[in-house]
Structures are given as C-alpha cells and as structure tokens.
Amino acid sequence: MVSRSFPQLLTCFNRTAVGSAGCRRFSITPPGRATPQSSTAVERVTSPWTLMAAVCLQRLPVITADCSPIEQRFKQMMQQMELEKSLLSDHELRLMEDAERMSRKQGNEYDSDEEEGHGDQEIMLAQDLEDTWEQRFKSFQPAPRVRADLDKDLTSVQRCLADSLVLLAEQQVGAEKLWLLPQAAWQEGETLRQTAERALCSVTAAGFKATFLGNAPCGVYKYKLPKAARTESSVGTKVFFFKAILADSAPGTAPNTALLWVKKSELQKYLKPAYMMKVDRFILSL
Image (cartoon, rainbow, N blue to C red; front, side, top):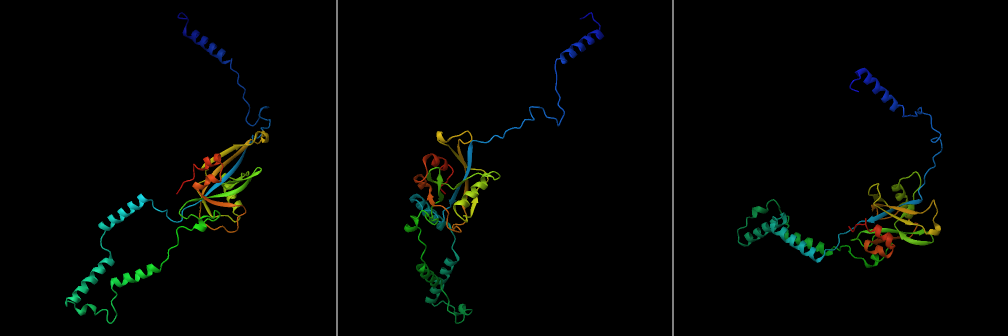
C-alpha cells in the first residue's frame, strides 16, 4: 500500500465504497400512490367499555355551623382582646357627652345657650336610643337554626342548612334499582361534561341551576359485567364523575325520579361500598 501512488489508492477506495453502497436497495413510492397493504380498509377499533358520566351536585351550607367548645372559647378571647384594644365608638362618645351635660345641669353649671339650635325640640339622649333599640331587639324573632321536621325530610333541599348536601338519584341498573349520583350514557358527538349536564337535566325535569367546576372529571369508577353477560364488545362500564355546585335551590318542576339530599356522613347508607370508596375521595365536607 505504501508503494502505490496516490491516484491508485484513491481509485481503490472509490470501488470499495461503490461496492458496499450497491448492497443497499431502496424502494421509493411516488406520493399519492398507495401500496397494496395500505389500500386495505382499516377496521375501526371500538372500546369494550360502556362510557357514562355522572354529576356530583353539592348544595353548600346556607348558615354557619355551630362552634365547638374550643372554637367558642377562642371566639370569646378574640372578642375580649378586640374590645380592650378598640377605640370608643360614636355612640360611646355621645354617652359621655350626655353624662357630662347632666352633671353640669345638676351642678348649676349648665348654659341654656347650648340648646338654642334645638328650639322647642326635645333632645334625644343616647340612653333613649339604647332603650328603643332594646325594644326592637326583643320583638325580633330569628329563624330557627334546627328544624327537626324538615331536617328529617331527605327529599328537601332545605334540610340541614349548616351542612353540605349531595344529590342522589334512584336509577335502574340491570335488574335492580340503586341510589347513585345522577348519571347518563355517553352519546357520540358530545363531551363527557355535556353528558353529565344531560344526566342532571334528565333526573330533575326542568333541571337545577348548577355551576360545573371544570371540564375534566374528578374521578372514575369502573365495574365489569358478570361473566355470563360479557361479550367481546361489552366488558363493563366506566363512569366519569364531574363536580357541580347548586346555584338555585328550587327546581322548575317536579322531579322525574326519586331524589335524596344527604350529608356526606349519610352516603354509606345508600351507596355500595366499592362505589362509595370512589365517591368519598372528591366530596369535601365544607
């Protein structure tokens, strides 16, 4: 190799490169012309799972919950601290002025010119205002926080005003009726959220006014059919849950199905354990 000239060495290298490149064969198909394999129709793959969407409709608390003993003590301590550090209000200043005026009258140091602007009109003292307010307060009757007759009515959305309630609907599943979150089967051409909105309207006739919290589901629950009922195209069902907040507490017309408004602590009485385990994760006790 050393004795060969540079032109001969270059010619030998080119032959070797061409020979190795000749071992590769490429098949170029012009664009727009399909091969026999790609011309065959591709069958559409369908899921063996039935898709459904359910809505977790919550009614938020209407009134504040009762304070626990430690919360009550803390509240009293904060009120006492605020009272000690606060300035005098206008009413308190007026009480002090009235007390000073009365003391001057009793000590014969009162100047009648102070009442020239009032004429014959009687001066309203701060103590008189307090007496008037006290009479109005005694005649005021606040609405009851606990209504034993209504709180036992599970179909009323006005029960347990201090708690958060969840809507349950009685629905036919196979050969039995179950208490579930309102749900409906997905239809082609709609999103899962639209399916959840349709499920809510289907159980409440005219429908509750609800605010959905996002377009993505907050949970999923799936179950398989009994082995005798399974087929290649139907294995089971997947239920996607969406959360919503009740905006209007009164439905337009009577509901189409049986409905219940229950607290989170009451869900286990109506839901099956496996279903309850999935639902319990995203229901917050507000």
